Image 1 (cartoon, rainbow, N blue to C red):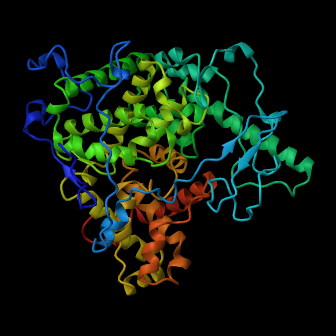
Image 2 (image 1 turned 45 degrees about the vertical axis):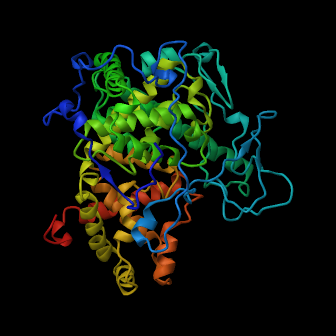
Image 3 (image 1 turned 90 degrees about the vertical axis):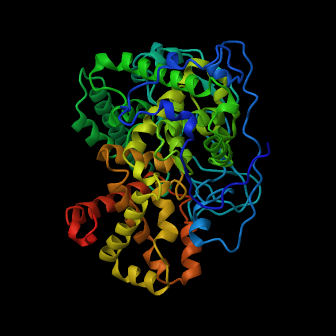
Length: 542
């Protein structure tokens, strides 16, 4: 049967058909697992072989990869909302990767192409030159001398398996069994923030500054380690630390704690993690045991369309293994949540979790990695952890995805009222140009700004969201979006309707790093502190 074309509406929530109604219990707790043994109709030999990560050793990969989806023709009569939400080509925040050469004599050299496209790390002052440009290590790159020294070299003496352009750590099995194993391994190289340039600073002052920054990073990391290795994690302390960002290598431990996926008492963490991962495998087995032809075809068809569109151009998300994992995550979540089913945009929200959990098992950039080279149980762990953390996140914003999406409409309305208080001239200009907030802010609320900023920016932002608490993805995000809009106030007030819409659909955030995200979060926190307890300013409907 030929694949149907993508739906014309920008956002569709599809409820599962009656075939899964027997599995749905209204008061089913989120931690309950389906009992695969209760399904008497499930054949003992499934007719559809899934990917190798869930099959027995030696079995072949799945033969049911998503059907190629043709690029839809843009309809000039489509609403501005529809045009602003959907996309197949690269969003402005998805930039091409730099070609990184191997370290030479302790220096890391970056080769940059000379085309007109900007990259994440390029500054406005950078000029394209003919030929190959090697960035001065005194500028943005970190020299070999900044590698931290180890007290115990044996702690990191492990065999690494080559995997394309990256390495699979040799101690992955230890990490799967106990995530705290990463605490005892070598910390990642200290990297200078992308926004800092010190080439014009005196060498002695530069060295002193680097030492001070390295000392601060080391001190913060030790505070995280002391907190997460305690017999019972102090959540207040962990939230305070995480608000200002989590070290990359500790994020796969900290995020599950903040989300409540991993228990705070240390003795419970390993058995709970093993149980939840097995529960997810059982859910997948139950959902797919009757073969592809017996899946809910409406849900599965939409997932097949959206998965290949997820982060276009990024090697990780073009890999078959990654796409099969994402399909399983989205489908199992959809049939467990019949009130919303699968909605376009949920696929984007899974990507930060997948990359964070993948990063703990490899020694390279997750976005350049092929997960198919991971041991099957490791890929299963990455997939299961992503599913449960995504579920926890969506539990707090599920009214964004049920019928009529009341959560998004409420947030957009409140954002318009808030901007009118924060920046009255901008709000008045938008009204005079007949610009409605729904035309651009709908996507900001639905995808949590992931189409406007890079995944690395999103991951840093989510450190703060998770530290803020369970309602941050709905409440605090409203203030972040307001601060995000006001940031461009001066430019927007000089534009007409067409210019405003085009600008907001392709914002110049390609060069953003942690510094810009932290400024945005700080501004949002000021607005939150000022207006959150003044609900009367948001009108009668809260």
